[in-house]
Image 1 (cartoon, rainbow, N blue to C red):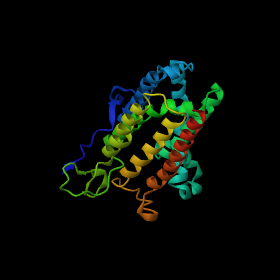
Image 2: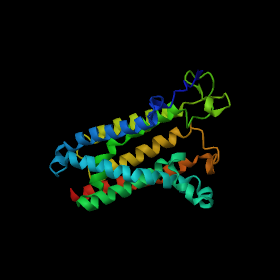
Image 3: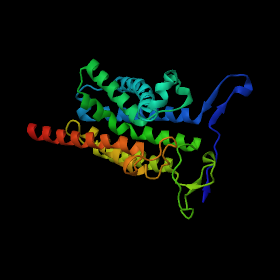
Image 4: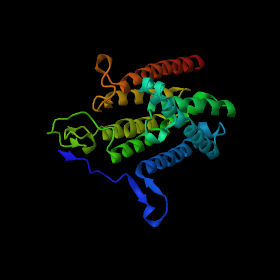
Amino acid sequence: MLTHPQFNPVALDLTGLGLPIQVHWYGITYLVAFGLFLWLANLRVRQPWYAQAGWTRQDTEDLLFFGVMGVVPGGRLGYVLFYKPEYYLQHPLEALAVWKGGMAFHGGLLGVVAAMALFAHLRKRSFWQVTDLIAPCVPTGLASGRVGNFINGELWGRAADPSVPWAMVFPQAQDGVARHPSQVYQFLLEGMLLFVVLWWFGKKERPLGQVSALFLLGYGATRFLAEYFREPDGFLGLGALGLSRGQWLCVPMLVAGAALWWWSARRAKVQA
């Protein structure tokens, strides 16, 4: 049985030098995520079918900008609506207090979808071509975020058998219980595994919308599985059928992914 190392969440502290600057590891993981997105997206636009469609490095930088503008408000709004709607209905101004924490991936995804729709409209490009381009570039960012969660010792897992070699006590839980390091599971599943699958699948030209469909199916499935090992939010617990809120939010993703895959395959067959 292991104990969480209790990393210092501050990577660089210059306050001792009289400078009001603290650089947190979690912030660094965001920068890493952005850097990986740009690198991978630039590789994607070099693929013949994107290059022939006129995609450039400038487009990838603009996609990142639009994505950031979508993910932050979307993630916050998703947390407010999906996790604590009653609380924020009574304290509406606190919905703006993002520095107090509280972001939801599924809300962030909806924010990015809206931002990509705006990008596609402004650039007169196919929405599905835009999402197919960026889908394989997203999981490494998710993996980076899970590293930040682990460093902070947050979003720990459910109780595990102490005989499990990697079972870990998270002091922040204040109960001394050996738990699954679910942040690591999510890093491996929805981060690295999903990246490998999508990158391999996206190396060939696919029917419009199919890479996006695989992302929805892949993330929905890996997150659903990982949630069995992640401790549910204390203020929510488990819901209907013994599923967590995160698992229920994955259900629409799986349905949408299956529907998009069917539409994409049917469209390709008609055009063949």
